[in-house]
Length: 322
Image (cartoon, rainbow, N blue to C red; front, side):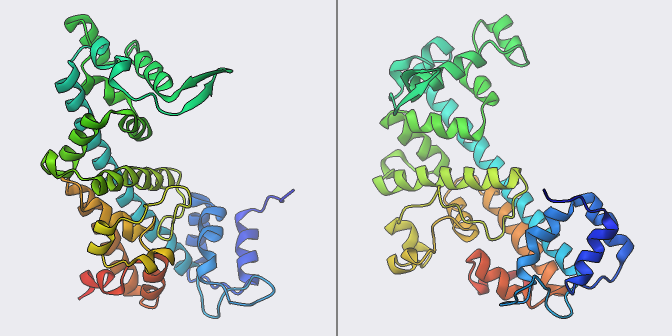
């Protein structure tokens, strides 16, 4: 069992590991505010001596540098959250518009099972079912939820249109809903989200869009749970090699096989640039480059570290530092 240590003991442990403190009292407050695990265990790996048998910080390293990395990452997490909220809003609007235009505004019409693909066969409540049945059960349950504005639409309009019902869905729900749409509806959603004509929706763009939703949702979940984000790379939700997209961002098939352009922060930024809602990329890039600029004014040697960990080309991170 890992023993409890109070803030004085935590400071002593870090001192024994060669970490210096410019302001011990402030450090105690920050450890109480954010937690030892979040700050120290989350970011110490970048400041430790290499090939050292015992865990020891590099000579001259400070707690203030450690907390600066934590706060930089927190800023980037805020950018990820703001960007993902913009994409969620755009996706929700596009799906609601498509369902209403193609199937009507009454839930009995647009939630009809024939409007959706069956999806994979799965087990639910101990019996075989499929993804469509599970999703439609969830959406139909929402129509009876006792909250506004659902109550208002039931009472005064006798139905709940899709743009109201889908306000109660998560990004994950929307991603799943998109997966189960049939071909014509999928194409329409993509054309709306990308801001292109429907005849421009190619197979490559369909694949790119589907993978983009998985990567964005993965980053959103990571940020929502305060996980370290600047060097996050999902092993489960990755962008498949896409000749059109990867050629645009200068990633070859060989570079892709070596790990680039799959699910890192740089790839996320470039995926967001495809969406008509430009606020998503603007938010992410601002919170990333501005925060790194501010951080590297104090810790300039971290620029190379951040570039490597994020798979961001150095020249793009330097853009706002000219």
